[in-house]
Length: 345
Image 1 (tube, rainbow, N blue to C red):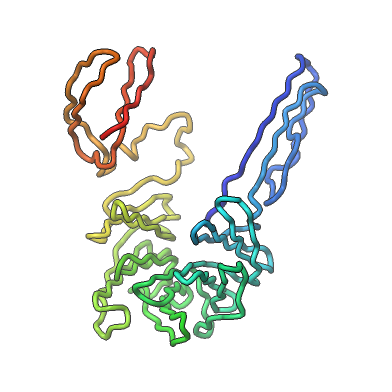
Image 2: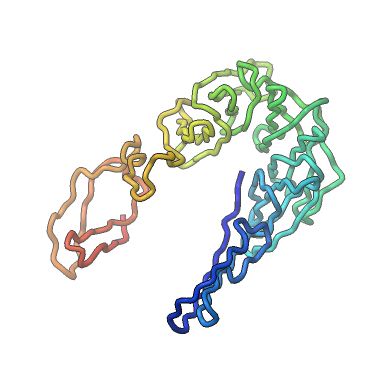
């Protein structure tokens, strides 16, 4: 679920000091496309004008997908669910009505988007060239309540999570029959799907684990896939793939932790506290989650130790986990010159 950032503008005009103050609170939450003006006014000549603008993408965004310069946001707009196509350059928003029950969204390479509909048990198709919903509807098995959806070129079909039946549906977009596979060994429904190469990952929110579904001979092969269940944490709900670091990130809603899953071993290698606990101080961040991570950078040597002021010096730094570092920052302990940054490698 993605909630767009709000943009706040504050303008303050000061005339002279006064002891007369009147404060008016207009709204706690500004709905989409709502402006709240003059949130606080103190005397006639002391104006504090606050403007809060919420992106007009609709109420209750539940999922998002990217298609070039477009962000496609699925909204739960009461009985008229919709997809808002947000142009990331112009910020123009086009709303596409879909009907009640829209949930997940995926984009293919043919300029089409596919939206699962929990209530209808089907998939709606959106023409991204014209930003309109097409008459085409992809039917799913009876009593289906599809949730998240992915599209992948090398596997061919749409991959749809069906939590109510504990299955994953492989749905071709050319009208061929779908194929259902058991998502998790314990039979519990998948809450999300991630695809890396020929490997599918199914999140098991209820079981606090994930399933690795490896299909080296292809998803439609008669060769049985390798299915492995790996324990994670409470409420594993959603996935994201980090292709650069070869990691699968899993959000555990029950514990508030982020699981770092190595894509080579398919095991959890580390955890990140994704939220701050109720008793944890908000005044200080001790960076403990970064300093104890398995890939934390470490400096072993620094040469030369001394250089002349206003001169160019070649510096050699050796250490571990420094891949991708491009700058060096120097901190003056006296506080006179807090930091200087040098570019280079």
